[in-house]
Amino acid sequence: MVTPRLPHVRGLGRCLAAVAVIIAVWVTTLGAGRVNVYAKPGALPALSVSTIAARYKANRRAIAQALKTARRIQDYDRAHALSRFLTPGRDFLSFDPRGTGRAVEVVGDLARAKRVAILVPGADTTLSTFDARGHQPYSTPGGGARALLQQARRLARDPKLAVIAWLGYSPPTVTSAGVITDLRADAGATQLRRLVDDLHDINPAARTTLLCHSYGSVVCGEAVKSLSVNDIVAFGSPGMSTSTASDLGTHARIWAGRGARDWMQFVPHVRVFGLGFGTDPVSPSFGARVFAAGPGGHSDYLRPGSVSLRNLALIALGRDPQVSLA
Image (cartoon, rainbow, N blue to C red; front, side, top):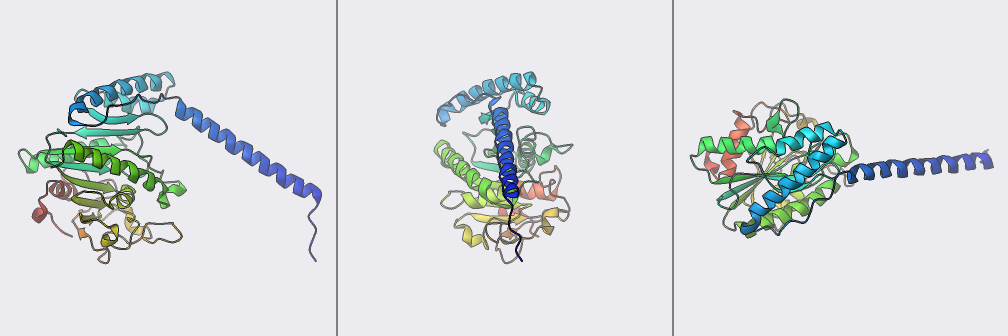
């Protein structure tokens, strides 16, 4: 026998649903307020050789203004990060403090470089973790970019390499559902394509390498079709949303590597109903060139002195025959 639903039960259900909607709107409003605490940065001149210095100067002013806001609202992690951004000699192509923040830093001489490497970070990267994450500065975009350039300078007296630490999108958090979908990657891919196109306008002769860590390799996988780059490197990757390297639809060389202690090896490399990112890039069936990444873990690829850092620098320098393969 089916028990009829009583009117007061249906009413209670509608009431609970209404409460849930109110709470969701309230939380969203709080989040929006938090985003809007930081001012929208002013317009920047179009990127060109003649405007690079002006963009650096404008972003430095924007960082200083955001630092004042962070101190005023007692956002201590953000304030500490922004104070580091203002260290003399640091240059930012773009900066936006709203939300979890975005920043694009140039390490080296971008206009005169013969090679440009773009470091694309993964989940949990924010302005607050752009330079420091625990005691592993090399595991962050800023620290990793500097480590890469220093390694290149050890390998070549004048590497003519510029490295870009690119936080040009809003990565998902490791604990969110977004980390197993490509929604954030799609948005990031649009911004990454725009950056690469702008860089080609500045320095059309420079060879470009994408260095894609963790969820950043999903972004690179979404971005590379019809994108003029020479090498794409996926390391610590959950997948690139394809079954094989040839499915990426690019003429670039595809590289992949994974450290022996990287927990990513235990993540299922599947893609079902839009969840997951497909074949493991280091598997033979994917078809990438697999480089030796040493014994390190998920955050160790850019560790100074590591096998992986040396190989990443060699790839960025175009010295393929010297890259040690797995």
